[in-house]
Amino acid sequence: MKKLIIANWKMNPASEAEAVRLARSEDFRNVVIAPPFPLIPAVKRALRKSALGAQDVFWKEGGAYTGEVSPRQLKLLGAKYVIIGHSERRALGETDKMVNEKVKAALNEGLKVILCVGESWSVRKKGLAAAKRFVGNQLKKDLAGVNRPMKLKAESLAIAYEPVWAIGTGRADRPKETAEIAVFIKRIIKTKVLYGGSVKAKNVARFLNQEEIGGALVGGASLNPFEFGKIIRAAR
Ligand code: PGA
Image 1 (spheres, protein in one colour):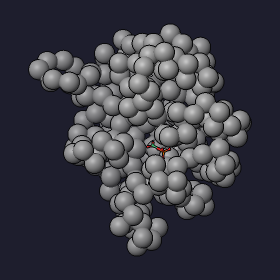
Image 2: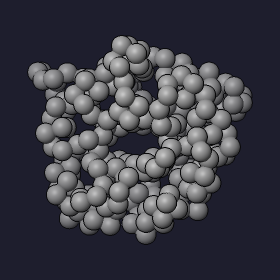
Image 3: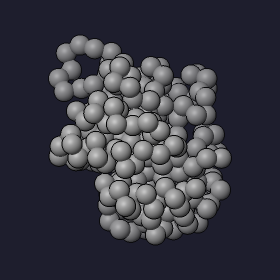
Image 4: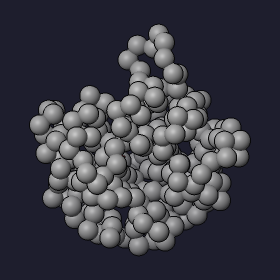
């Protein structure tokens, strides 16, 4: 199976010109580029091979929701994917209930969802079993009413396992342990499981060599075209 690489630019870069430059240098097949909302149109024009993604979405179709963006609006901009439930959003107050509403609304609109889950260090330091319990609980809440009722196609939802303590810290998980969590996740929902958290050119192959890991969600390293290019080559 082809490995999927998601570039999560977070709140970067600062200008449209930079976004276009970055997009052109990261335009590969099986890659999803997720820029901040205002940069989506410029990035879309720049891409030929990569798919376009967004970093968040709201669950209502329209109305008095200041600052929010609907699934349909994302589709109108050409987004095919949306990242939902990133731990940086959860840290700002996004609950499992909100994540669940977002997942359902995005799938209903035909967007492909990258659902992020992952435990904090206070959980993981108790061991893998504790991490599995935590992630299993998140998935149960985030996917309530999604799996069977929605007759989900495997390609319309991927799970990004992103241990919170590994994000932006330079301290990636151990690939063997990630693979074990991926097997656990696949038992709950049969779909692609990606890894995210300090993915770099020097460690990506060790994750992607694990059969259970279907790709990577890349934050910091996706802002560096040279590093990102090396990640893509390793993914092949
Ligand atoms: P990182 O971020 O690669 O910078 O650790 C990953 C993410 O937040 O998705």
